[in-house]
Length: 189
Image (cartoon, rainbow, N blue to C red; front, side, top):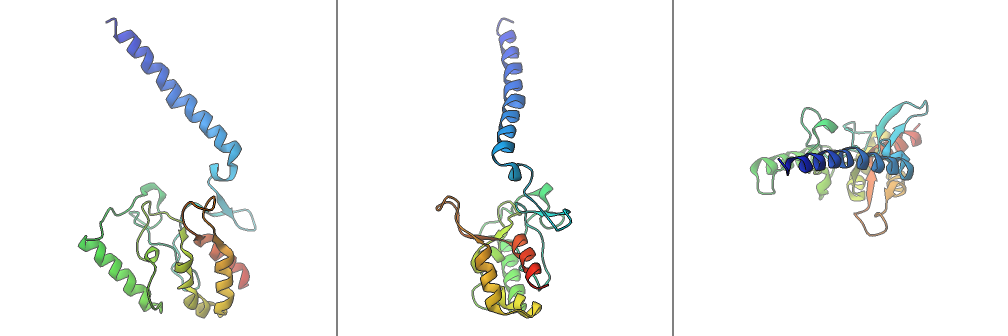
């Protein structure tokens, strides 16, 4: 009985500290230091209506738009409630079939040559909003044809929307697909 009282007190104190105080402090700091990100990095249209988040991928299948990475989320693509990858390894027959089907599908749309992996493999979260600049550039001919734009215009747009590595050395160069497509809509109006 002597050990139970301190254990219960310890449990209550650390529940309050770790479950209440710490999250409140971290959330407050996040809102102060990174206000846009802490609120979801929402992207709005001209009227102020939220149309997406810069942090979560969205499906695009129209030939007039750049396409994102495939999503491995269940129910429907880019569902943040079921975030997760397929957990299939590179020797899994289902994974190989899925990737093969995606490659064939992209070739059927007119994309030629090597297809970057991020156009046929889902990210670990299934929600990645970015593709590599190479993945955007292989789509340029299709988008140019669908929109009646020159490939040079689109290549410049992809280059302009390419984000560098964070802090110059973290991650890879990337292109946010939603932001690229919104910029594309502005150009072709």
